[in-house]
Length: 290
Image: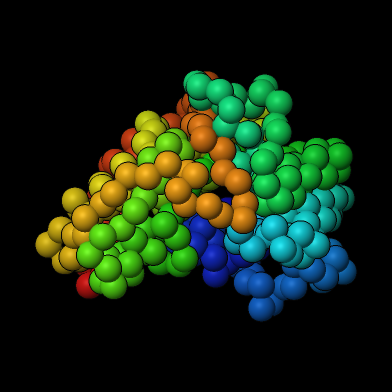
């Protein structure tokens, strides 16, 4: 049984990771209240006291638009903290698992992005996440960076929960239809991480893409959400719009689709199609009374 230190245990991904990994590991799950990600010494001590074999960082600054006005704190959490954790993991001889984002790419071309494509983030969030990747690599430890996209769960703050809330407040919703990506449930990522841990001793360290299979637009994602919840959530009229009709502080990539072939070839891991993963989350919501 492996000793695992999990940071960000109360976030939507952290909750799913704890639920998935706890039964088969010696899991030390710490939330932001227990470890301040802006405190480098606290991060170092968390690793040293835990003496883990694996460190998983599921914590991040994910407020994409707010990051434009709070670049310093976004950089501290997304870049400096992961670098410190990677350094301490290397010193402890522990593997370090970290999550990055599709937003490291500018989305300027068609086709799925591979790990060999050059990042060119459009916004502060993407820039700080890429800086985090670079800091982790510089630590020279055994690290695995999983880039994922459009993460959601039955709990937490995410697109799905926002759609449900807005549907109860409005009869019409305008949804962006020209940004393409792969909605990926936190539960599927947790399953992928569990499988990756089983392969971690023989797998090549580095960057891997880990998203649900397939792709859609935000508009298509919203359509699927309301179709699945039609019996329990009011279905508003959905209006497809262009990105220019919904200006935001942070610019988003038009094409966020990630090629996950490397993950499947190296570790035999393939996440479910996004539609199937969504169906599972909808079942969770219905069981909880939405």
